[in-house]
Length: 228
Image (cartoon, rainbow, N blue to C red; front, side, top):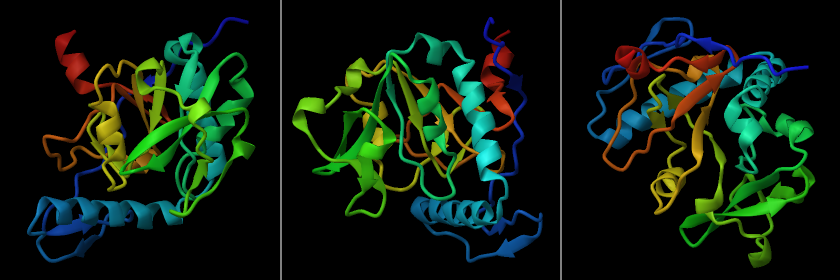
């Protein structure tokens, strides 16, 4: 049976949190002190996103819809080396992709000396809780996958825009990865609808992704639409 055409949707965006307040999931404004720095603005949005995700229901269903959209995309079908991530409790469960990973090399990040290395693994069972509180593979130099060989990288984040701007978890690891010399992989931001905002605070080092996918499908990038 031929693959279904990837579903493209308009962004289900929410307003960006204003510096003087953070919009709650119910639409009410939770007033905060005006952030004095970019870091405070980013952390305020991260806090809002975490609070909303903890209340979200049907994570498994939503995660399944995200993964179905990914496997229907040309980037997945053509990829040989895929970099994914071990999801935190309230992030999309991208490990559902394993059932569709025949013939692919799947690798996960592990923290090393202020950066991340990606280790190829045979199954998600090889990814275990590490000293930093999240799951990661045991470091094995023989299994390190160079980032410049990735075909597809799935990128977590606290929030995204439809144009691919990303607010990360706060460590800067993915910003350094995505800007590394020779990096050529197709970069996909993976999140739930409620994590998509009209804008996020960005700095020069913040890296964008090529596309963003949620449980509603692939977001239509407004800057693409303007050129067509």
